[in-house]
Amino acid sequence: MTAADAAPATDDIASIEGIGAGTDHGDGDGDGDGVADADAVRLAAQINEARGEIERRMGILLTEASPERLVATMPVEGNRQPYGLLHGGASVVLAETLGSVGANLDAPPGSMAVGIEINASHHRSATSGTVTAVATRIRSGRTLVTYDIRITDDAGQVTCTCRLTCMIRSGLPTGAQEPLRT
Image 1 (cartoon, one colour):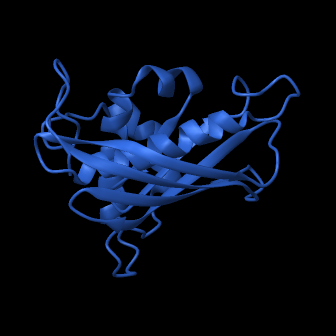
Image 2 (image 1 turned 135 degrees about the vertical axis):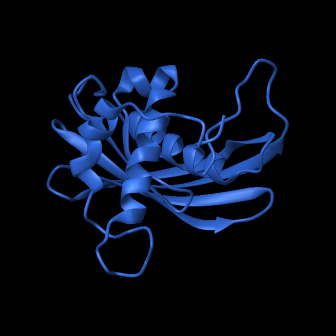
């Protein structure tokens, strides 16, 4: 399935439109037209419809998606460890989700991207609210793609930084659907 084949649900787009709209991240011309952002919001809505089990259970919601930059949110509640802090593993799942989605968006047809290495530094705790992750592509090659992911709390303070490297593999597992592409 390609991004062009998927029809975004109007409700999904409306629910996240206000989050990334009007900021001019994508087309780089600085004119504030939001055209690239609108495309990134629509693509995020399409990807949210195809989320995996873990993303649904953890409440991960993409708000912007392109191969170069992805943004997602995740609630702290439901993802805490016994001390009431956001579980470090939850931050890693959020980071790997974004990087893997980004790498798959740019992977050639008939191939898929899989995470092969991730590291995380946990800088401060979050106990409530929502965390927001921004993944920025550092390097894209034929076989490896690397992302820098920064996770912040509601106050904008960095809670975690991650680096993810994905490998582009030809072929898909038996029964797997083609991932969304740009």
